[in-house]
Image (cartoon, rainbow, N blue to C red):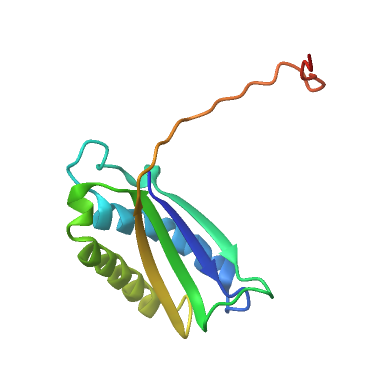
Length: 135
């Protein structure tokens, strides 16, 4: 399941509207760029998580207005042409930015392939005031 962290300058014009549009577009483009034939390498837009984080006053952003960090499982067929896949995603983001004007200045796309494991957790609370047994 790819996870995308979009960091942005909170002073950008209409940023909340732009973030909504990015959240709609980005999963589709990540699927196009990163799906592969390895077992577990095929996924849908619903599998892509997008997280937004504004730059803080103490962050060193090197002059970037918006950044996209994509973390995905490392598969041989992704690794062999990672630069092409990253460029494809960057071009799709660039086209949408040209059309919708999300940000001005500089941005980047950084795709990282990582060994990873994923497990779903489901917690159920039986009582609002339940206490943890501390033996």
